[in-house]
Amino acid sequence: MIVVKAGGNGSLNMEAVCADVASLVQQGEQVVLVHGGSHETNVVSEKLGHPPRFVTSASGHSSRYTDRETLEIFAMVVAGRINKLLVERLQRLGVNAIGLSGLDGRLLEAKHKPALRIVEDGKQKILRGECSGIIERVNAGLLSTLLAAGYVPVVAPLAISHESQALNVDGDRVAAAIGTALKADKVIILSNVPGLLRDFPDESTLIAHIPLAQAQDHLDRYAQGRMKRKMLGAVEALQDGVEQVIIGDGRVAQPLQWALAGHGTVIG
Amino acid sequence: MIVVKAGGNGSLNMEAVCADVASLVQQGEQVVLVHGGSHETNVVSEKLGHPPRFVTSASGHSSRYTDRETLEIFAMVVAGRINKLLVERLQRLGVNAIGLSGLDGRLLEAKHKPALRIVEDGKQKILRGECSGIIERVNAGLLSTLLAAGYVPVVAPLAISHESQALNVDGDRVAAAIGTALKADKVIILSNVPGLLRDFPDESTLIAHIPLAQAQDHLDRYAQGRMKRKMLGAVEALQDGVEQVIIGDGRVAQPLQWALAGHGTVIG
Image 1 (cartoon, rainbow over the protein chains, first blue to last red):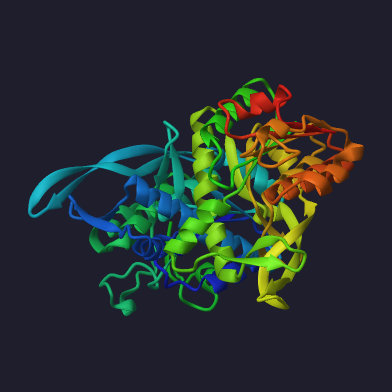
Image 2 (cartoon, chains in turn cyan, purple; image 1 turned 45 degrees about the horizontal axis):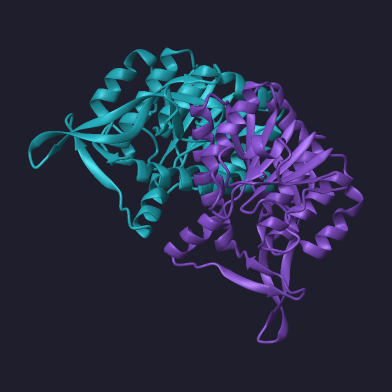
């Protein structure tokens, strides 16, 4: 079983990803596809007059502030537009895809993080009304039932809190959590770079292989921006029983075949 | 088993519908909830600069022209926002809801109607690029699997064509098709009137009961506008084995309890 995470920042070749998913499924492989959608959410939010707000956390990371209105736009774009158009594309390729968000059947249950500790004008502040969370439970039974019946789950990165509130969650960590819950052989996280780079953004400094024991150290030393979350997802998945995580290049012609052939950063 | 259709024109009490679904589920009833979304789609389409276009068909009906851009906005609003917020609300009421569109797992397969024959400026024209269809097949196996596992399916009115293209379909007829496929005991179609009126919009002229043999005749004689589709759905469902269809008032405090107590137009 392979869990794939692809898409979010708008620069990946999703047509090629879907074609590769179709090949894997035809070869008898069980696949779960997790997608993102931040880029398209930003575009639609702007058009709807509720532009995205990015804040700097106390720990120095830049992140999106997801108030309830942003969450509802996110749900609309990610679980409506992106998810359903991916399902349509996969169906056209003969894959019996079924789109779900983490709300559906409590697929992804998360701990709600109701406030952000941010830095603004040099001062620390608490920003309330945040609608995001950290996944704590995956309804593996639902995915197993669907996979056993021949469906290919396509998962939008929304979760449900323990109090049943819709939350925004990180797509890379969704893939890691699902990979862990299903005891997947491989988790492939596609990115718009060739993998983890020792000297970002110099692509010739790709780190081809990282043993699990060194993964946390590489995360701390080399991961920049979004790559931090991909590496964090990788470390979590490997610690919890996934055999191998590959951070691959989502811009190439056959991104999954390429990653499975060992191109990218192979961890574990 | 009860199939419920509720919502679409923006005036129904969806909070009350969800509360009633929760009561039914607690009593051990199997329920499938089908929703609409035309009103919200119109609002979002306006905001996104692609206002809805309504046309008059050659047979004199007013209908929405669904070009590809409208279809994608419809998917976003109906399968993203409305479907996921209903799932959230039901989950909060203790119902293990799972949201699906007709694309997912080919739940609703439809015949694509690629062009509309319309009347404009007194002349008949063919309008191409239409993305809507008529349901021809329901994946009852998928719904049965989910119902047997204790989930409550919440269905957005999108379908997939035989050629795997996403299509807009009528929500009332989705409920009828699902009711038929699952051999439901009852299909309840909620409306913003008390039922079929002999003299629309005079609510004192409610027709309380129609035997199946007279349903088509009542459809032709009394049904106006949207009520035509509800009656058409009812006739189709009854002819194909559903025991009873109730067209009920979706504006009251307990719309499903009210309809099940025999208020509204009971057909069959």
